[in-house]
Length: 477
Image 1 (cartoon, rainbow, N blue to C red):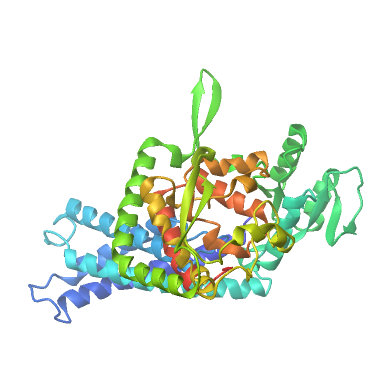
Image 2 (image 1 turned 90 degrees about the horizontal axis):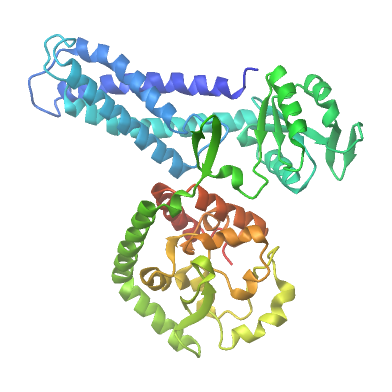
């Protein structure tokens, strides 16, 4: 089945090709015709011919990133990073190719001008970035109008399936239009159940695919027997309908894997990149360098905050509390004090106001906060002393947030995955809503995704996203 998103991709690739072509030619004119640089001009014809090749390099490089994944529209930071990466690869490919062909295909030119290639690299980054911002605005417009959406059928009516239904229903920019559910019970009827449109059971899959023009089937329930899953797949294959699996076994499917054979037996080796020795060294070195630099540069500001805390309320400047780190090892976390003295003794009285769905205690406008404490919490300034914890090795800059022993006692077994790594000052959950995420399972799922898919660039992106999340006070308590 021809996916609707392919039309968007063709549209974007065509626009990018034309843009890169004209930008390379513009760079030639800037170099030799406008007079910004004084040199003996090269003939234009070889550059015109080479611009077709450069444009192809550009499309290949962009396609190597996720920039054409219109199902997952990138945020501004990701889009910029994708663009820089792709255009940098394009510039490298262009330079290598120009060196290889030299004067053979260039009308006697020894080599294409590196200034032309560098100029096109800079202009491409700017133009392609804003061009894709424009593309995405068009895609979002059409999807809000219900154009270009993939009709989705969800098998199962459990918690994960319902959450996915509600999410794609309220976020059409991802390109989905939820049609209904198939129940795994014996009932083969179409009905409404608690707002869910049940189109039948698994036995009616074939008729549902035909009658409702389904583009994609989503499966989540791991308890469905293997033979039933294979039956579902065979029917979807027959109708060229895409089948997608939601990892409902607490992140296991998201694991990076190595595939190898023992004899004729295929094996999958599960591994977390973040736990590999050389990755741990890279992450630890960056943590130490950044934390020491941050404390030195911020020391005058931190001294001022310490004085404010001291003169505005009774009690110590710093708040120390036992938290659990990697391997459930306890450590003392350091924060600027934001509450009145004896605040922890009042916690039991406030438990009924807990706004978090799970073992974590969290309430907005905590009455125990001091006036300056509310300001420090609002902009996460109270967390800065945790750079000391990072230097000591108790924490990392990025990772799951550390929790209390009391909270961990109520964790489910799969929640314990968060203790596989050092806790962090910020994390994936913090840049995806901070305290506004009320479902603790969602927070843990984000933590597990981070652990299983870690990269150095993921840490950089999370840290960069933390800045606007703090400044714009997104999800703060």
